[in-house]
Amino acid sequence: MNLLNPTHDPARRSWIESANRPETDFPIQNLPFGTFERDGVIRTGVAIGEHAVDLRELLDSGLLTPVSDAAFACEAADGGLHRLMSMPPRYASALRAALSDLLKSDAPQRARMQQHADDLLPRIDTLELRLPCEVGDYTDFLTSLHHTERHGRYKGLADPLPPAFKSLPIAYHGRASSLRVSGGEVRRPHGQYRDANGEIVFGPAPALDFELELAAWIGEGNSLTQPIAVDDACAHIFGYSLLNDWSAKSIQWFEQVLGPFLGKSFHSSLSPWIVTSEALAPFRKAPVARAENDPPLMAHLHGVRDQQEGGLHLELYAHLSTQKLRDSGAIATRITHTHLDNLYWTFAQMVAHHTSNGCNLRTGDLLGSGTISGADDAARACITELTNAGRDPLRLPNGETRTALEDGDEIVLTARATKAGAVSIGFGECRGRVAPALAFATHESEKAA
Image (cartoon, rainbow, N blue to C red):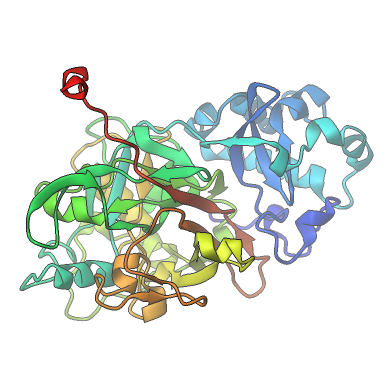
């Protein structure tokens, strides 16, 4: 999966001009998979510049060799990505290669593609994007040492870093049903929390926060009782999306005994395109070395290949836009700039640990990295850290301040994989705007009283 091939060629260009712009997230070297609704029908496609290849239309066009792995993969992806993701990686790889050949500037089939461009290549901004794949299970990890230590200090813990943190990737089981595609409203939740007077109250959560994360999509799963070796884990990761694990910190910090529950389960946002593991191959790197005094890796978490290429040259950003900023015509303010190097554990180690007890992962399962915060102030990847738990308000260019997200605030997450000699690729946006809490539902008898 991580070997380079012609789809990664930095000299390759597309006859779709928007795919050749330096700022595009979706050059021909990327080709991420997604799901969308078109004319009332659920379709799957691949993003290229400002357009998406409609795989159903491509299949019907006859431009793919009928007996090829690419045609089989295209048929498998028709109407949903689940089946394609469950297949051995060579099928998605063959489809990416065929698409790259069809979309390159000197493609022999260019004239036929252009002739049917309206059907084959709708503009992304005309499509209703959906979650790339239905998520069966969602596990969110806690893998940034800096994020974990800061939150431990905010809570007044004598040892802010949990004893197990450097021995295994810590995680909790999240709520798949409230995962939503980027865009639209994020409704402020109700819940119990301790107010400024120390009283336990119930109401709209006052301390709403974002969490900048990367999420891995599981492709082929494993059978129950059969762990996945750390150096085999990459073959089980179909690709990655951006994740905003919205958090009601007031609720979370009061309720958290077994782990996060209602402070997290009200909404999590995902970017709509899955950037494949294959597309990210040029950006593989060794993960950051562990400190000399850290405990040695257990055998099931140590892989030769993972120690060589378990990381990514990936920078991630969060931007904040308020209602006042938008009303004035101002652009969103960048509030976070971090790097995947700020994770203490690799995604392969997360997969290996998750399955080490025999737990079976299934196609479409989602693994979140946890908040990707670094040591630098600019790399703090949530409002809680950016404000030192509310003690130092975040100041915006127009004079506004924030200690938590307010109604009307919008968070936009982005990321870029960049390395010398490779064409930079992105993930698209993961966007969400905070909406006021709804009136809490009461029983009819209470209304009458």
